[in-house]
Length: 373
Image (cartoon, rainbow, N blue to C red; front, side, top):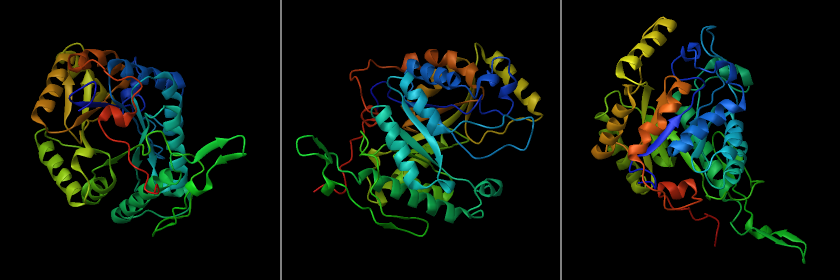
């Protein structure tokens, strides 16, 4: 449950769109995709419509095909820009932990949480790609178990570093010349198979204490890491009704691990293309497929149609209790943005609390610091 919706709503902004040919649309703004204004406009539109979460994917992948959109901005840096233009939406950039040190991740997301006044989170990304590994030259590709074990360690380190400063570690006593209470900064002394980190962080504890961690329930290893470490868990379901069982299994596993299932949120990915009529939407997607030379195969349920139909579908998801929320993944981002308010407004509730953190908006408590006496 959130302040604005009975159903949590997110949007994933992936370049000009999820469809590989989205950049060829006349309204794609492909020439602006490396301008801050493109991302600010998307974030502002989602925020104004009442969307709860903005997901910013990231990857070190450079597509080999010259017919696909290539290159991208850093998701965390982009998030730091768009937070200043938004008021209430949560901002969750992806960090590829396979090639990113957790100390850097913890500092970056903590800084984003300060910049957004408590509206930050992040998505745990990993990669199996050999070409991406070669970009760094530190290690070869890993199998799935190793990748997810490394991802789990990364989240553990990040969370521990966020707690390495107690909330009242900064005393700023000009009279005595003491800025911090050194007894309230803690070594984390993490030693694992993939990382060895002493700490403490160089950044104070974030406003939320623990910014929200998003994990994709990808395969058995991914589900295990999501259940153990995720606050937001993203799932895919080729048939909507199957999401209920997936959510139930995840909540059960969360409970088995000693966590409270009511303190996680399971979000269903939904690929969408919205147009003024169903026929116009079908025609637009057919054109995208023609440009790419093949029909796109969706990994999760998709909706192609008008705004009213999408609102009805989201209402059904909420009433059917098959997920705590839905992440809209537009096939063509600029084409979707003008319709967001039409889709969301029938689901919207009056906001009762101003200046909420993301945790507050999602009804999740601020965690106690593990090192606090």
